[in-house]
Length: 73
Image (cartoon, rainbow, N blue to C red; front, side):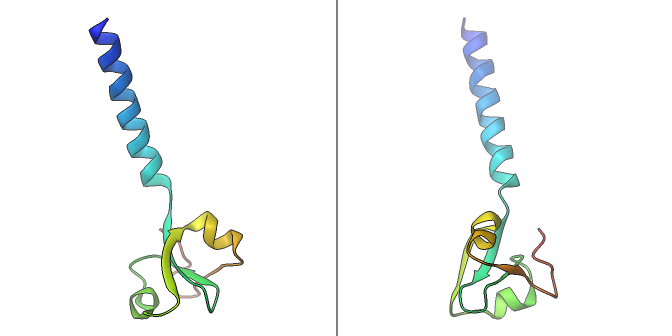
């Protein structure tokens, strides 16, 4: 019984880790409606109107990918 419980718990931890990795976080500029990958030069220069959100949220709010980085992780 303990082995089954440990196996289930291990699976859940791995699943949660993988799902977190695949949730793409981008830097979204609410004024220009463009999103950038976190390492993009324009994301690093953006100090106002920018927040980190998942890519789906950025697109849902009218976001377009940056022409430099493409917004891809």
